[in-house]
Length: 145
Image 1 (cartoon, helix red, strand yellow):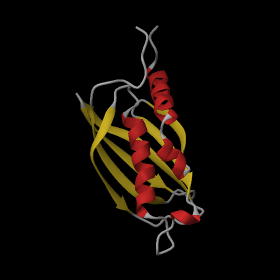
Image 2: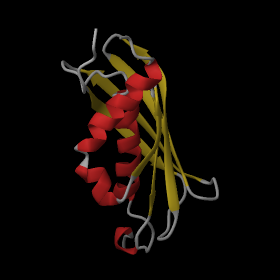
Image 3: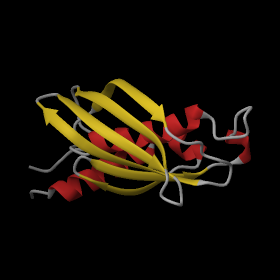
């Protein structure tokens, strides 16, 4: 039985989510996944604020990086980050609902590029993230031939 690209993305995400304790610990939710795409969200807790009383940049990075991971692993090929960068555009605050939307920009062979935009509940851009990934050996689940 052949599965669709969407089914493959969903099953890949299911396999990843089953053991992604870090994202769960941060309070993240996987809202949507598709081939080369993922949407994750979380509400910023008071304990995730820094000394300026705004969301710690590492928390925002973790949300963007998690969305990136689900997007680049959506082809049922184990894919890892090579490098990534983030630009903080506006502060997130305690109580904000942040959403990270990852989308594939380019993929060729074993390498690819994904962009992630992090927004708040008002649609304001909080951060822009770019990740480069590389496929290594292995799959997330066994596909029937």
